[in-house]
Length: 134
Image (tube, rainbow, N blue to C red; front, top):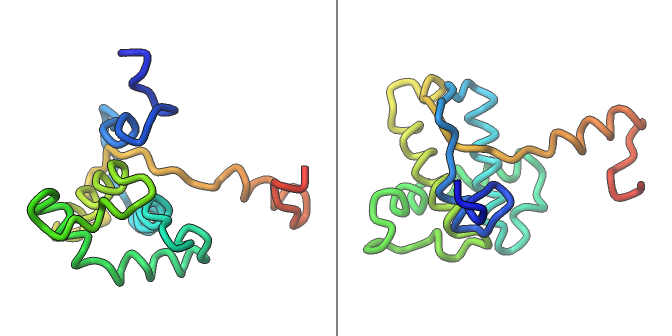
């Protein structure tokens, strides 16, 4: 692998990386994909909303997401307004595939979805403190 093509690289590098082996999304995975897409969009503070707020944001922009996945260059190009546009486009494509399938939760995803799992674990371990207090 090229040294500049890695999970810590630019938005473009991160947008084209995916796992070799896909995994079924499952119910939680589908929800995390929606949260992940909102985090990548991030414009206007979307990434600061509650998890439910981010899911609602994504569900409220499904027309934009489908348009981005189907016609990334000819359509409205909503994905280009995102803070991480290439990762956002990849998430739009992945979410569109899942939502259009007969069983979205069974859709195989190869996309790395960033979670705040470490922050959640620290919060549970240290009784409500957030990571920026350390």
